Image (tube, rainbow, N blue to C red; front, side):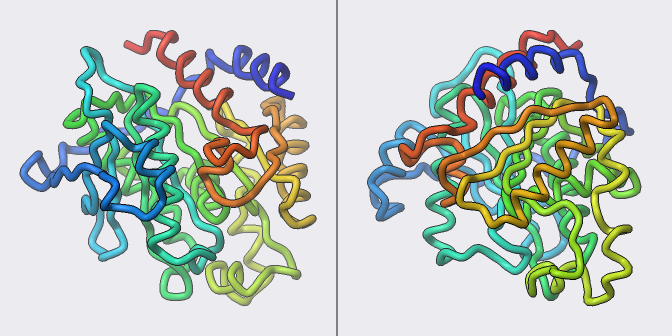
Length: 309
C-alpha cells in the first residue's frame, strides 16, 4: 500500500495550486502570543515528550467569531529557509469531538508537534460548530483561516506556497467543500496538496443527527451541498484515507470519492489506517502503525523540491 501511495505522490508532483487574488497582509506580530508547551501543560507524558523544543502560539484570531481562532506550532530551533505548512482541520462530528476538549487538544497537539519536529510549521484551525453554524460556515471558516495563513505565516518562517491541508472527520468535509466550491474561496484559500481522512462527502437520507445539524433537515439540498461535482475539478494532489474501524458508511464515502475521482482522470491513492482514535492515530503517533506519516512527509518534501518561484 505504501509503495503504491509513494508512486501516486511521485506522479502528482507536477499538479499546480489554484491561483486566486492575494489578500492584504493581516494583523502583525503584536497580536502573537508565544507560549512553550512543557510537562506542566498536559497530563499526557507522550505529548510533552513529543512537544519538547516546540513553541506554540495559541488563540490567534482569524475571524469575527470567538471560535475563529487557530494555533501555530514551530520548532524552537530557527531555520534558515521558510518551512512548509501542515494545516489541520479536525473534528469527530459536525457538532464537536467525542473526547473532552482538553483531551482533544492534547491529541491534536501531538499532530502539531509532529509537524514542528519534522521541519514544518503546524497550524490547527478551530471553526464554528453546528447547530449554531450551518452549511457552508465550516468551509468559509477554513477559507478565512487559509487567508490568515497566507497573510501571516511568514511571521513564523512558514512558506504559504507549500501548505498541505489535512482534513479529519468533519474537517475533511469542510476542507473538501472549500475545494469543490470556488464561490467559497475568497481571499486566497489555495493549498498545495490535501489529505482527507475518514470524511463524509455526500450525505444521504440516512444522515446522522450531527450531519443534519450542519446540513439541515431538507434532504433535497444534500446533493447541492456535497463535494460533487466540484471536487472533480481540483488539480492539487489528493490522498484519501479511512480506518479499518470506521463505520461502513464512512468507508463507502471514501471508496465512492476515490472511484469518482479516478473516473475523472484524477485518481488518488488511498490508505487504510489501523485505528481511528484521532488525528494523532492517523499519523501513527500512538504506535498503531499503518499511518499517513511517511506519505505525508514524502509529499511535503516533494513540494519543497518542486522549486516554486
